[in-house]
Image (cartoon, helix red, strand yellow):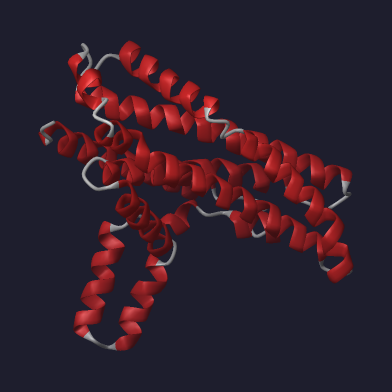
Length: 259
């Protein structure tokens, strides 16, 4: 694969997404934070700080997830449905470069979105005199980006062989189940049913354990004031490795498709 061609593809995806005005969603994030900062004190005079901390991280996660799923599933699928993929593969670019380039392009968009929303979030916390663990919030934001990048890889993988709607549903299902895989394993053990235990173990092994990349509660409730650096590195490596594995699967499937 050529790094130059991948960079050009990623740049084109980034510019295309920006032209679609997706970055306007950052303004929407700032707006809902402004509304929340006014509304929460009216309903919870003693817990508004925790509520605002929790809401800000949750909204950031939701917005990033919408971008990763709805744009990610259409990156390749849209090209296939509109038959523009024929012009793309006719150029001196390999199918693996197409997949990787589109992945990095959307990941760059997510990086900009998450970084900007994090900065806006910290500004609101600072001017609202809301006590907050800045270091933990920054760590949580980094891991949110890793989680969204992994979801992007899932979305692209489904998008190369299914319709956009089905790919969206499947990606969202992976996100939901991936956040509770550890709980499912515990549930399977408690059921004392061998079939249930086998099913939950299979889900745990094959689906991404997204809870390893979810540090929102640590940031909000200060559970990770002094993070375990080794655990953070291992979890980050897990997310990157899983994303690479999914991209390899997407490349394999895409390379076998006939147009």
